Image (cartoon, rainbow, N blue to C red):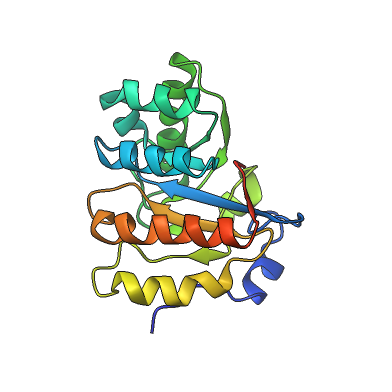
Length: 203
């Protein structure tokens, strides 16, 4: 069974990381793994239609390959965060190499005058060194699972909508892998949030 909501004991054990935000009526939609041609454009069009702001945790190499898309994200008033240069897995490399990949992504952002709002580790995988040493790590409270081909769009929608509460940080992916489900669940989430009078903000 896919777990869409982070169990409350995990944020309690790791309070240095950001898992949600205590605010009135605001929800934070986030998109990992882009920018991706056409798919990120679809996301931006949907957000604009609902006058919603969001946060994009971008892979550095994708930013290098798609500089015009990252500028559209920036121009639309969305936030941008670091997702490493190469979607690195913290559990499969030493800490120094991992930090180097993080720094390479930061360097790309600096070259394009992009201010990063924080860091999201790929796969949500963290280590003791990361917890000790890295600041402004942003995780999530709701994981849609849009990347999971074994989940249908309708299953995701029925599971995720009840979890959309003020302060929630929600993960989706502007990636090729996730798009078959993203293109269905994103409009549904946006409509639901509008009906509930939630404010969709960037982190």
